[in-house]
Image 1 (cartoon, rainbow, N blue to C red):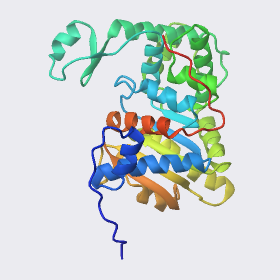
Image 2 (image 1 turned 180 degrees about the horizontal axis):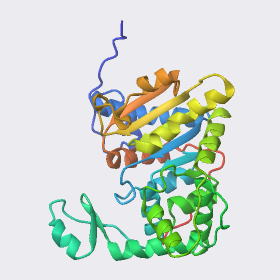
Image 3 (image 1 turned 90 degrees about the vertical axis):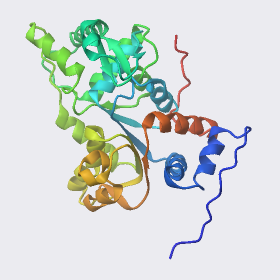
Length: 330
């Protein structure tokens, strides 16, 4: 029988902080309550010193979320990032001083094509500038040890160092390198990184070989050695790659402990059978999520939820070992 906890009508108070709003929202209903619960669970996993895996899917960087990820990395509110290649490419693009631009989603795409503009719903960037970023990736790849397989976290650490040395703007990859936060990209070929590196090899340049099995081994080690929490923005490959760390670790240590804290922000639904919408309860059947895990699924556009959650964390004043002060962006 459930406890009879009354819904507390939300009281508008102009003096209330975002942190206060989030805490009050856990006492209302529907996705507002889940947003408040996600804030509480995130703070709890930090307070318990859980190792936080963060999965990033969707076009979050073009949508303006880059500096939120920088903030989370620099304050060590996440310990390991697993991302799509697209987000990391758009991150590098912006770090090099290039921009994404706002546009109406009803724009004529035939005209966009004629003008060389690539659209992501209500956002676009010039194709010519993307090509410049492709060439930056190619030039960087020529500095790598030829023929030696490289894990993706090592690739992005070196890229972050390379870009930071050239005074690039604060970005996900540069911040992760400075803060010692590993960045994995298990589907790196499915992005402009794959395109750029393929073209480089076709033109006689080095053929970059990624040790993706090494990525699996390293992330499983991180999961096996720590109490873990997971946060997913969207789903796709980043979500599955983080989920499988517990399965891989269980094969090597003989038991499935499962992630102890879990938050997902998704606009998908479980009844289509896809991973992006699947529930944490389903993941418990695989041993990916601990049976007694603190878990929250928030059905919401991440561009709404992330700014609120990150601001709430900032106002809560959570301090974590390994946090580094932010260098001002130009």
